[in-house]
Image (cartoon, rainbow, N blue to C red; front, side, top):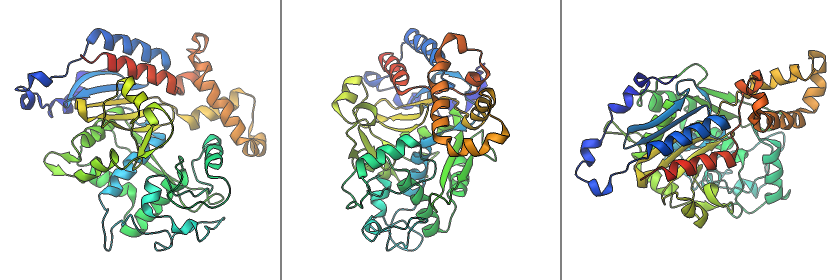
Length: 394
């Protein structure tokens, strides 16, 4: 159940008086349409939703205080941290430096000389062209990466593909160049500054699989209300309580120095590990120019709409680890089947994701323990919900 005091921090930031003299630009929302959106979101499995305009809470429902995984939404947070250290000199991230200059390689499969010519800028824009196994990469991501990049080395900067190897390697480069842990920077320079309320020992986790790559992935587990705070920080171009936490020009780069992905709509552009809906499909959908968003599996979203001075947060509680183990047990697998499970992990995971992404939508499965624990909101359902929210703007 939602309680007003959960959002008391929002009202301390209200900027209504600042804009009271700009009545011609006032933004308002149709509450009846928002109620319809709420009913729809509950049907599709939304775990938490928040809509905020000018730092004022407009609507919120679901569990906004329990931290869950952002999945790939973590990449936008990582990029924001890296922006704090971009520049030249010791302890800085010079985006023009190549992997060879940075002495970055990988194992068990080493990089070629051509691959080592990729710059840090290529990695942060996902155009390194490097097809290498990566931690936290699904079978679908691997298949798509190989479809676009092939198996031979590519000239860096010539091909875009969603590439976990690029993102994971940026973690290694950041920590090597600065001597800092990304986890510590987030907790000490962002979480503390924003007074995030639901930080735990599991807020930031590293994952490594040396059979694939030496470069670890990172996982962020945040509550919806803490995601909102991060979105508001980005809405204000890195400024919080008169402190410039993230460089202002970084946010200009996101929406100007992006790559067109060839995917229509919400993911039509990709800039510095943020999605930039930049094409005609996005404009026709109603998304204003200058919007950028963090996006993770199962429709984890932080959408920043500067033109509307608005942030939208959406979460689905995938809870994949617990749910997958529960599903294995319900499917008759036992500890003695561990070798089979490991050998067939990808196909089993696909079957499990289909269960929570498709079957859990059926009314007969509403009370299923796995469906209550894990929900995947599809891109199609989220886009329908987002369209309902957009149409609620007056």
